[in-house]
Length: 344
Image (cartoon, rainbow, N blue to C red; front, side, top):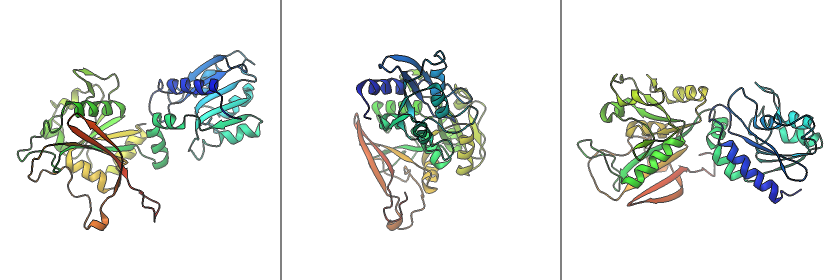
């Protein structure tokens, strides 16, 4: 059964509802319940770990039997397992829902399979409606499910000749205001922002996400990686979020702990040493390179050693998009897929 226009509009609304939920251990999910004639019965979204899932949140607003014969529009496949809450697939079946339209399959080995359970109970199921939009909302969560760690974006700004600073260490500002504003928007969209202790000591960054002179409503959790102590008067200690300090150079340990804390996406801004370490260890899921039309020269490179001894071992990237930002250019790239081995 094809998805109709009423269901399509309801999915657009469900996607809006999904963004109301917090990013964390659980995905952001929205749900809309439609009567058999297409009128709106109820809406819901997931309010955070331990709370009812979006479908149950919506059903809870209806009287018993009110959902019989209804259609549920959900941004993620209804779950099929019991965790802190029961299986949403079962809740929909018991409520008498006759049809379910969802955007994305649940990738979880335990939580997935809800669609099959619904079909086995005689419920009509359609999937894939506005899947690209739904994926954009929970991209970090999907990566975390697949890799068991947060999604990592490594960002740097460089001159046209690949330098991150002048010979005296000064780097403000290589890029222009449009590029800097873009960085702050992307900071606000991340769960955490990571730097090394070297950057903290040399630049004393605040690591806030700013819209002009004002702070964005959402702020990433600042993460400092390295063994040198952060001064008590450092700007990062005045961040709206409580900073996390990791006295280690083991990035896998850091990411594992962040994952346990429910952090799905990490924005790495920590200078050439930290950026290079993430790339060398194969932990960069996306690269953002802001390129300014300026020449600096010298040895202050945007990246240092990333484990490439010969050109045959160069880390190939696929550029997803080139974004003009005033006089600057942003390259958004991901690790290229090795077609012979099927890995990045």
